[in-house]
Image 1: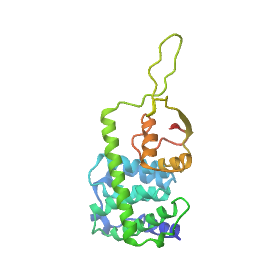
Image 2: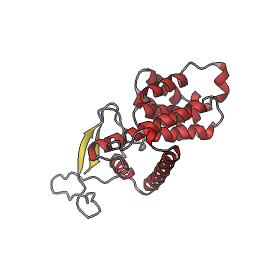
Image 3: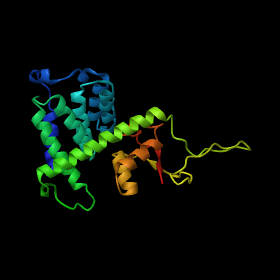
Image 4: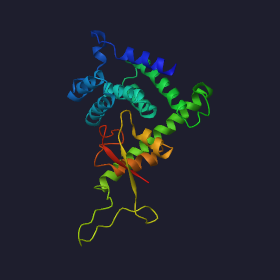
Length: 242
């Protein structure tokens, strides 16, 4: 049922534009990356389309349409929390647009998807009161913003993750990365597959997708990732801290 609602809403939002909607569009739709994202989506390359929309958001203020498309891509990738974040960004920028009511329905769909992904599914989506669910989502959004600030601060103070170096001959090795207890940091390799997301990989490997796990994976692969929302292309080998 949730997927049916989502597909219906996506079809409505993705329908052919006509002149009556022109005034609700923002300049981000004229961006080359936005157009490339549309082409990728038409070709079925959802992750590449998402990366294009995130690029537009990073370089433009008020990129409402790009936030809407990014939310749709996350929802299609079964990653509801960032989907809710980007849908809310669209509502914040265009609260009275013709599409705003449809986007609010997409937010409800993402909320149900999130509840269905909870470990053990302790309760069905409709079992929670609306106010309780909204409160939980607001807390998650606040945690997400906090994580973004922490990552931004980290990026300003760090130039890169120091991985265990290789040694050749008698050349002394640099000091390897260590854990909090002073032991050498160890990593396992993981090959990015179709449909992967950072939270999905964390949930698959560690059993949880907490902000701490996501941050650790991102920090270990900052040479391959531009942000926590952008995985390398399929087939790329990334490092997962043990």
